[in-house]
Length: 230
Image (tube, rainbow, N blue to C red; front, side, top):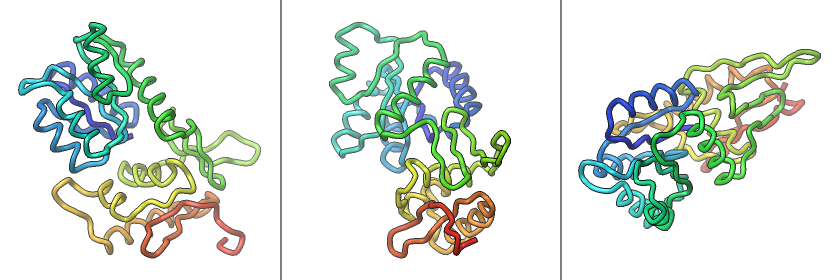
């Protein structure tokens, strides 16, 4: 998942960043309300880990702004403000879950997986052809007849794009969304560069039983490779 981590405590932020990255997530960080609001507007995230007590105000400000523009990104509030009335305020502002500090990093990861399943209606495992996405492991595998699935390794950006295409499988993903996955925030990726990237990824999928189909004017779709296409 691509996660926005909002935390002003530098020590805790670094620990969480390493833990989330080790679990296979791509993480952007913010430490103020202003930075949070900006990143949340310009980048699509799969989840937001939101601290409330920030130097320039409450994280609920950024949360309310996101919900006001109809952004339904799952939000897990992580805060020392753990009184019942404060939890109610956070949930009423649009938070999906709430975890008081101190917390266990394993529980944060488990709650993120639960939020993704509940919000997107997706399972921990998706299969197209012989290609398997194991979301709990944060890895791709290829089914092998008579044996254990073999790891299917990809560079980080290709992994993010293929996971987006398979979350959930059978969904058409726009060029703009995939361009955002591949680009820096200030540098949009052109259509020609995106098509070249997809072409390389399509070649790597050869033999997995899955392929990427281009739907002109709409985007891309991962589907099982047809007998004619083999």
